[in-house]
Image (cartoon, rainbow, N blue to C red; front, side):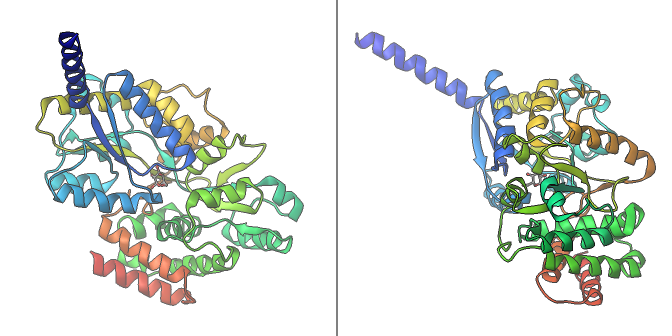
Amino acid sequence: MIKRTLAACVAAATLSTAAQAADVEVLHYWTSGGEAKSVAYLKEKLTEAGVGWKDFAVAGGGGENAMTVLKSRAVSGNPPTAAQIKGPSIQEWGELGFLSDIDSVAKANNWDALLPGVVSDVMKHDGKYVAAPVNVHRVNWLWANPEIFQKAGATIPTTWDDFLVQAKKIQDAGYIALAHGGQAWQDATVFEAVVLGVGGPEYYQKAFVELDADALNSATTEEVFRVFGEIRGLIDENSPGRDWNVATSMVINGEAAMQIMGDWAKGEFTVAGKTPGVDYACVAAPGTSGSFTFNVDSFAFFAQSDADAQKAQQEMAKQILGQDFQKVFNLNKGSIPARLGMARDEFDSCAHASMDAFVSSAQTGGLVPSFAHGMAVPEAVSGAIYDTATNFFNSDQSAAEGKAQLIASIQAAM
Ligand code: GAL
């Protein structure tokens, strides 16, 4: 009896060591309904592949909180196995020597051929893959509740001037025009849509990606702040601090007519059982129909000394680029697959619009990286833009003051 119990204990201990050795601890900030469903599928795929999942979720839209926690863990010599890091930050972590490459997986599975150049370039450090992309989000979307529009006698706007006119009609009919969460990254998301819609992609690229002094110091920048300032009056008084998914639920529930947000918002409509084109509309943010602000989510891998941990990382990287994962994850998340050549039929009309715009905007110069979502400029500069946008939006600064502040804060951060 004792012998049998001991044997069982040894077997269990062996099992748990094996499971532990193959664990991945994954830092992410996907905690809303649609996001949680998406990340749960990654866990499911890894479990199927024999890799254990240690969840390291840090709530907070846009990931600012998660990045703060990641820095403290990394500095104390205890980084997670993988973390949701994207854009130029991947390079910054790579330069600091924290990342391990997953190039053997990428080569064996031909990632260079599976990914668009605009995505694969960002995943590499020193020519080697150090991160795996899960999706492509389009940020410049307007989400609308058609019933409210109808009741208010309003039409879905296609320019920012028209947006201001239609929003007024909606307010007069007793609804909140724009569902908004007063957090710096959400202010910056709306600001980014105004920059693109008012200035166009060429101005966007020059001013907010290349940080060209003349483009920043132009009449266009002042016009951007004028329009952005008008939006202050279109949100409700309870917006300060509100989470983005709570703002989305206001459009879903018929409290507010519109939200300007990336297509992770679609994940919330999907979880609520809503159908695009019937229960809600997804259109390009005003003035941006030919453009696409891209935001690619990815997991970067932190250097591990343990061989089993490295193996688990490689399995995770392999699963992420798999067709199953790219399909199901993106159906839940609201984004489109990062992997090329995926079947479109199970995706909805919003995803089709995004897929088409991704391809066409790349040909016309309208494909630009999102500065509000860490894709365009180093963290210090995007922080300066966040601060300017949020200070302006929450004050009565004039457009001229907004522009001056923007130039000064970008210069100080460079
Ligand atoms: C974005 C991120 C999305 C989504 C959103 C809200 O920056 O790329 O995946 O999570 O923030 O947190």
